Image (cartoon, rainbow, N blue to C red; front, side, top):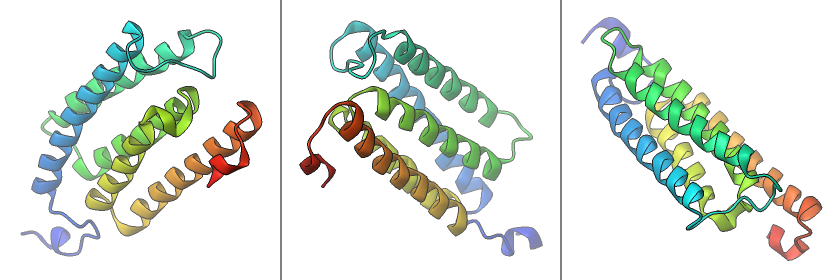
Amino acid sequence: MSQTEKNSNYPLPEALTRRVLTYLNLFRIFISFLLMIAFFSGIFIKAYFLQNSGIAGTFLIAYFVMAVFLALEARRPNTQYYFLAQISLFTDILFLTVLLFLFDGPNSGLAVLLIFASASGAILLTLKLSLFLASLVTLAFIGEALSGLLLRGESLTDLM
């Protein structure tokens, strides 16, 4: 074990971070592909907030492309796994927050994926970064509840 690994603030060693990041990348590709299939086939989810579903489809395709790109980046031999974990979890929270706003809020089930991304950040990242990501998820939930109240006409009891 090198001197830099002993003094690292990251909770996991780099080899274990690489393994967890590989599983997270596979999960991200699987989820983004299923969300795309469910949206384009019209089975499960519909974009209630938009009149035109092209924006929602574009975000779902972009999320899938980003998932494939991050998985390919993790396969490179000179990858910095801690940095890749930061970038991948931040993009997860960014895309899932936008999709949460587009697809009827917590009723769509995407809130669970945001909590999963925040919990993954607590496993892979330093305390400061994981708390930052958790605060972004919390702000996303508050913003979605307020937008549901103001834009979709939901009642005040939905905020609780």
